[in-house]
Length: 412
Picture 1 (cartoon, rainbow, N blue to C red):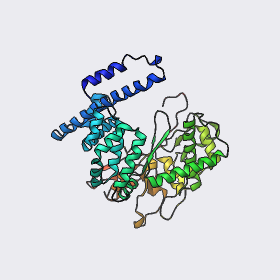
Picture 2 (picture 1 turned 90 degrees about the horizontal axis):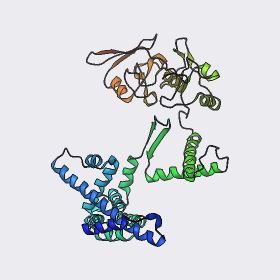
Picture 3 (picture 1 turned 180 degrees about the horizontal axis):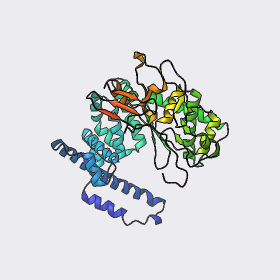
């Protein structure tokens, strides 16, 4: 686009009083704004491309970081610009259409995603359709363009998409984190189309089954939020119906006086290492799910939770959870629920699965204990820990203690 065209478009857009437009005047204005926005994005993409050229000469340059810092973008937004620049180079006709404002960045993103789905040889064949792709991108909306490009991609695949599905299956993942600001448990995942579609169908069917019953009173009224809320409840219900091995119970450490009468000055309340629940909710859980008792001595030492022939039992894990919030190695912050229960004397060496011989270790320290040949011992009186590394260095830790829940109004 020539600079005179840009000035002309800006002149048409800038002075318009939108509140005075009628239906006939809206269309031309939107068209002018879209073309101007496309040109601006084209310049941004051109800059990203230039940064890539500079990075080829100077490895210290990161195009994404440079774009993010200079343009006050997020790193994800900057990455999108560099991806568009790469697509524009691979399909120059499409890059020229974007630079001239004749198409949109979203059209370019469609081709970017399509190229990612293809093997190298098939990508080149798609890129060779550049003139057709550019003409199509100028004349249809993004949804119609995506449909046409997906059809072309399917025709070009030399392996019917099996390699891509294999990569998608490897990329399937699910993660959990606790939002410190809201206190919510945030779940984030991505699934390959096969298993993802199955999960979606199961959730939809479960929502339908739930809709025949009573919808929760606290269900949001907004239609979109309501659907998402029901989806979440349906997923939880599916997990309960599935009866996951090991159960879906939540480990709750609470003293009897708090459970019966509420918070007091010496309350002990700890839930799943990173989850915060009110005492009233814990009481309800005790009614709904029952209580797994852990026998405690006066100083808070676990006395007896039973034995197993090979692995720590759920009761033993619950007992260890009352003692440790995290990996037992001093200074390690990996939460208990992400640890493995370690036999101080290996089972293969006839080590017993007794509580005093069990310790929660994160993956790193579990490998160190075995492959790294660390020697770890516990004082049977207070579980104070000592470990020695192969270089002869010895480290000691204080006895573990239960965390107390600060009563309302007190400092944490």
